Length: 324
Image: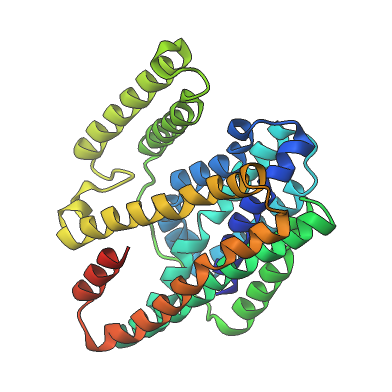
């Protein structure tokens, strides 16, 4: 829970501090959005890598390395002097942050029996969503009183708490013999994701397909995705096994999670500049406004965990979609 809260707190506190960072670094909203974009691109690229690493290194050992790496990267991010340096270090931070979610889920699945997965994941999500409440408020206070650099130092006490509990509570697990890693598929997917993100992020600024740069990004992205798709369907041990998409429930879950994340993280980058620059809200008040987004999520996550003991997940998901 503190490991997941560390990641969520960092993300939402960053969104609050972005307008202040724009002024401090003399950046436009398009340029400063790369502070979040770089982190999310790294997370998307490297998340599947941790499935292979956890078998090779072991869950507990890898989790410790990821948390320490995230803390060290956060410390370096707080000392950034230029926008380019900040974006690069946020990408490094995203590399370690990519391992927090899958390793947390692996810990829960390995520790709790199946009948307790609902309440366990409910409490886990409740703890992580507490960061949605705390992150904007603390981020706003720190940005107002100390400066935007202090936002990233919040990760250090949370990371220390997570390390303490992992060393005390989580049992050691033996590494497994992993399959051979598909570096070709990994790099093809990474190039495709990075090119797509560059195209979307720079499109408005460069007038979309009237720009040769955007057209180049689009061609590279389409070509890399094409190579990746062909490679996945022909390789013996591809980076991403397409057979998992034969599971209908898994695909439906991915689609729902895509749209939920689209709203969750999309608004995160847009609302703070809108509230502060267009509506004139101070940094601290912006934090309090965004804080309320987490109340409903926390309550729903906790209730859903216990409701899953008695009910099928399908009606619960349908109720949630209709409510949205």
